[in-house]
Amino acid sequence: MPADFFWPLLQNTLQIALGGAIALATAWCVLRFKHKDHSTSPGERRLMILEEVSREVGYVNHCFARYSSLVIESTRFGQTWPGARKLELERVNAELVEEFKKLADAEAKLLMLGEKTMEKTLRLYAAKIALFRKQVYVGRQDISEQEISDLKATILTLREQFYDLLSRRYDRLLAV
Image (cartoon, rainbow, N blue to C red; front, side, top):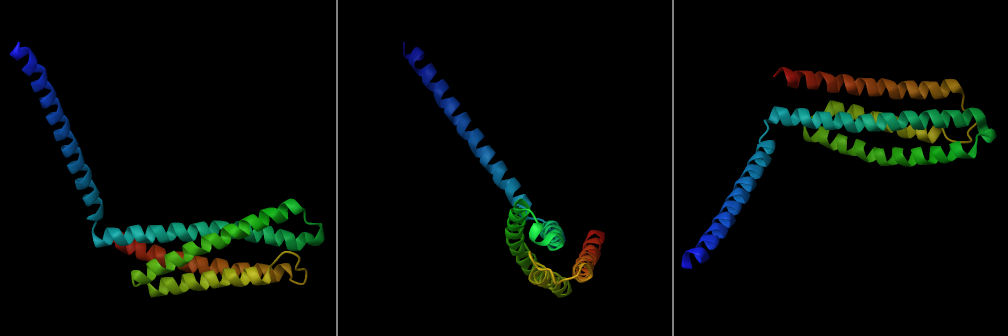
């Protein structure tokens, strides 16, 4: 009878010990792999940060393109512009304001990396978008399509300059 009593007890004890060993091994593996993610080289980390900056600026580019097309449409149609489009513009405008926070984050990352020229170009790009928003707005009829086109061209030129700088830096880091 004692053997019948101790055998299940021994089995349960071994199963609990094995389960604990598996849990400890799993925890150790997870921590080890997590630690590996943080042990990237400084060059790899710079690449990752530049990719983040590119994504953040890309979101702003996309949002600004939508905003500018809607606001240009509003200047063409004036008072006859449909209310639904006005609501869409308000929503896109709110998104653009939200995305501008990402530009501030991107600028901070560039300064952290010592990329002052890139940060300055990005800041000028953001300032031109802000100027565009002040000069081209719903209901404004006294601005010509040429003036709007010139403002947009300046913004696109600054965007291109920023991406040229970013691309050159990225390529140099990849070559190392």
